[in-house]
Length: 399
Image (cartoon, rainbow, N blue to C red):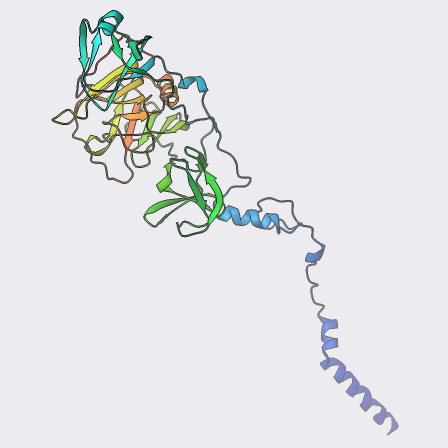
């Protein structure tokens, strides 16, 4: 009887212990939590997967967010440099003619006395002559041209010397230039706050994202920094040879973005802003080849019945004809590139035209295209037959 009374309490205690949570924890030990507080921060960098032995927080987390937005780490400058500045020097000096129809005299004495006239240069909005000598008399300036004549004109002492970029590695993303001073914005909208950063004219920038907003393309040029296409131009990097290019050397002219790029062996080697044909005198889209190179060229013409748009340009530097009278050439007259403006030619600043002239060979391909599809396709005609007279004032050596 006494033994039975003693066993009953022991059995009750055992049952209580079996049902107790303490007993369960003892039977099934829990996995201790990972001691995150013991892991150090990772060195700043991009970690596509969990490194395991450090925490990719802080700077690394910011870098990961930039990477997701298309910004490589570290953000690298374009693998490019400005070409040699001396390329902007003109091969011959020039002078501008003002006023109405202008006579060209046989000698300086004839110019001073109104003597023998060799020819006349019609009135027009843009008239320039070459200049190998000058004389000033009675407040009037006369210059001697390359053909020996003398004409009253104003010497040109300054010309555009901005240069594009020569590349030693193809960039991984598109880039561009401003074509007018502009601020950058915190969002792709003119209503967004400005970042406080101002861009001057013809400043290059990299493009990490492109969006359409408010009737323009917007370019993300830095984290939270946007520039509109209203004030800039984009160069689309495309190393794929256009159909028909068989030597892996071509010049790509983008009529929509007003840019030019030179490619060789699958890499970008040069890029610049240009000015192509305007209105009905647009530059023809298509694939052409360079059939004539001239270090110095004379260009003249008129496209209106009253010849009010007549132009006469001597000493046009580094011209390369690829489509009848359409050519890539340098300009020394005042112009703002990045806009359509010519009579069909592709205008470049002198230093850029010089670089391209030195690089290009006869027979190299010229691919003219308009990504927007707005420029009409021309009626095919034989390549190499000029549509208008091309005047060669002096013979020049061919590369």
